[in-house]
Image (cartoon, rainbow, N blue to C red; front, side, top):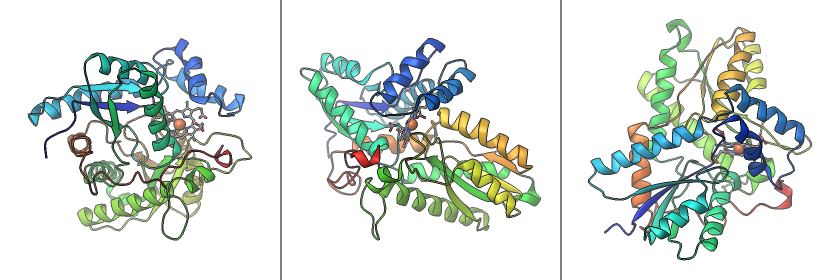
Length: 341
Ligand SMILES: CC1=C(CCC(=O)O)c2cc3nc(cc4[nH]c(cc5[nH]c(cc1n2)c(C)c5CCC(=O)O)c(CCC(=O)O)c4C)C(CCC(=O)O)=C3C
Ligand SMILES: [Fe+2]
């Protein structure tokens, strides 16, 4: 099948580059969301702790370069653009540039692997709004949530194995695998897509991947690790239920059960976002240290060659009918209702 695209667009969240960016960035993210002021101050402090610079933009620059190199190696001559929802380079500006460059149709790869309003549908809404704003905008087709693509799964397995290797041999076999993802409101999970037996796709997809990664680790090491799925970065009003348990509470709980070592696997993040470097590396690892629990954080996919190749495949095959196109049915990642706020 001939490639119908004349560009690939990498679509991400965006983050501040310097201290003066932090407050306007947080305003962009939370406009109309009813996030309490105290929470914003706390999150602002996380960014200031890192000099007011989020790691996410440099990681996207690296991913863009890796995708360009991967395409060149495969002999595919396609430009790659990059735009964000919440910070420069803003999506609308990039779509305008694409139109000026004569791009007619592009596949869109978001830096988020799962279904839900925050992790998928909001990006689709952003694309629709940008296309509506830019005269002569290209057709933009987002690839499906790719949590189950072998290139993504294998990179999580590899990083989990590498993290297990960092543990002392006598602690390794009994180590608990603690899969971590971004918490979302319970109602947003419910609306993230249908799964058999009820519940939401966001949670079901994470559970499935945690199980598969644990099985693939066993296939490589012969050890069936116990594993859990837990959450970080809860926000919103304390009265709104969000997915639990929180990673810190969970570390307390497993320590209470007598677990001596854990591997934190940040399966919800494709690179070392602020949630990873602050909520896990700074906060959760400090909790573990206070408890005397040995904890190692597994790497994120980042620019792992298998992951980058998976993104290329997802983009180039987006136009084909069938499984690789899949997922984005009318039931998936529904628009947000008042209940999910
Ligand atoms: C599911 C999910 C992902 C994963 C999917 C994906 O990657 O898209 C994600 C990613 C990210 N979230 C990020 C940052 C923030 N998220 C916030 C707020 C929120 N996130 C939510 C969910 C998610 N967020 C939700 C339901 C809210 C409440 C507000 C609302 O209902 O929209 C806030 C406001 C402060 C606060 O409330 O914590 C900030 C600053 C960054 C950048 C990090 C960096 O700088 O490296 C990234 C990659
Ligand atoms: Fe977020």
